[in-house]
Image 1 (cartoon, rainbow, N blue to C red):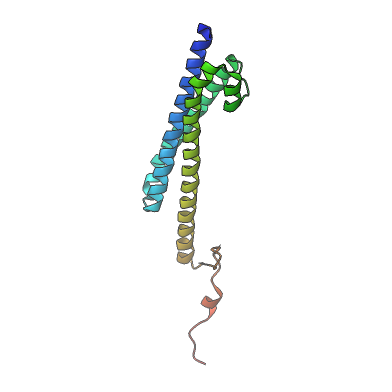
Image 2 (image 1 turned 45 degrees about the vertical axis):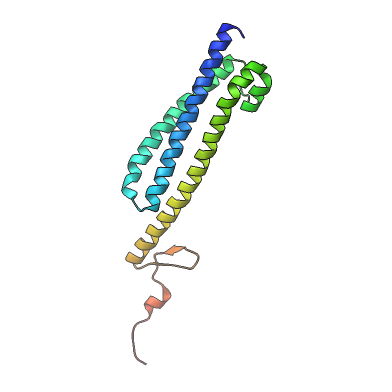
Length: 160
């Protein structure tokens, strides 16, 4: 490897490590959101969302840097697997653990996001049911909320 390529490769790997760290950070936030929702500590959500938005902006910036560096290394629009196939053996052995760590963090992020969305969806539904009851509405056995009064509420206590 020539010196310029070595420096670019090291910078590329550093950006991948930063991407991995940022994905780990976002996964942690998602896990904390899920935990807060599970424990009905909804007042914490705003700070989690703000922290997550900042991390997502950081992630986007890192991704742009990664794309520029990949282009400079001749890897424009290649997947990580394709990069490992195209790189010489020394480069591939240097990059493989970095790519594996990023892949692991992205899987963790995907799982955390899925769990968080599921728990938040459940909590939102619970709040909708509570609001519907307060407004005189109801919900059916399938979980659909209706603001119309249930049919039995139109009946009055009358002796026949």
